[in-house]
Length: 364
Image (cartoon, rainbow, N blue to C red; front, side, top):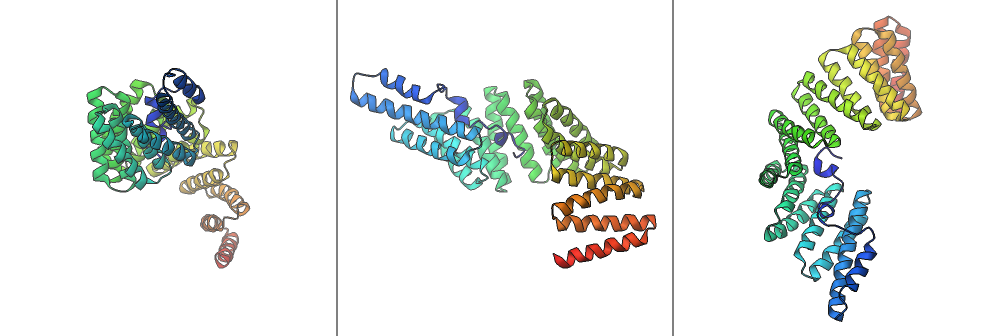
């Protein structure tokens, strides 16, 4: 998900604030059973139970990535809460609708529903909810490239979180401020906020969030051209990914480490990380990752002037590209092979690569 904390936390705000029974049907039964003196009360309580049930279902759908189903459930919950003039319920449903639209990358609607939930939360002076809502709203504005609004919202989220002693909310706001400043191209300020967020993540001993912030820090340092610092953060992230047995993330980090070491001119280390990435890609049967890792190893050997080894990896990459019928990659690899064969003085093979490349270009 995206690299920001609100998107990664796959539990909508409402499910963290409302206690639900394990079976929604039991909630309705208990509610009706506890008010048996009038039909009017029975109907009202049944409607409340149904609203809670829809809210609960929406949270379950959201947590399993069924976002369209979650939207329908949250919408039903909102309508029931609105009919009952239950403002607390409306705020929960609207906030969850905003976060779900955010997860669907429908950022305009995420803003729409988050602003509606914000109005209700402000009316109720629900400051704990405001921390989350301002954060969600800020993230949506960031994706809409409205960075001034994004920063304003995240600052409000941060201020409220600090006033309430909400360390998790403070951590998220700092991280998301970093992302907003990174989007503006102000990497030094972005790094400052991310480093503060990292301190809190470590204080809370939240390894998954720590891993995510380390990614953001590594990427920000890389964009700033501080490759040594980027490598440091990526290596810390690699340790966590391995502790979490997250093979997919491990592969991503190894790729980033290879690129950063290459940028530093440390070709031996770049090759080593790229080979580890290749191994992970093969173990997880990630064909695209394998193809890219082979290319990275080849480029590393090319930079060292070890053209024979570079050719070996380029040839393996070409075979995969051909099996995948990826003409663009095949054309690119043939170009690399042609240069490597020329460097070795094998002009016949270099010419053959040129002919194969021209054939691909002519058929694409």
